Image (tube, rainbow, N blue to C red; front, side, top):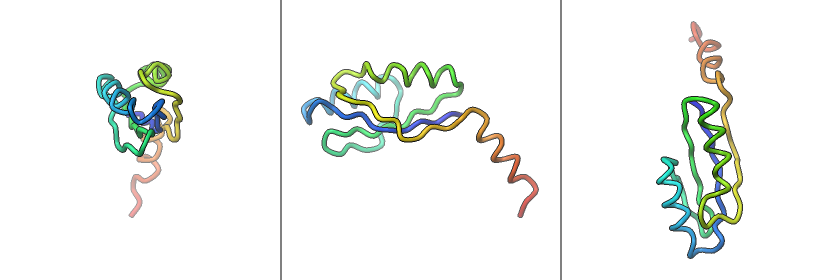
Length: 88
């Protein structure tokens, strides 16, 4: 599972609900809203799905800017679990 997180800055507080609804329609979790900033979390199974989702964030209705703050790399969770295997 790949994960990406960040926030979208709405044009103004009047556009926040529009941004939130657009994200929810795309099956993107909204984790927080602070004034004009809408914090999101995306979980997708493949790199292709994640890239497609991230590429379309600029088209979210009511968005002034999109800021990506975290993303995981494909296979990172597999490597981490392998490194921890057999340790106490």
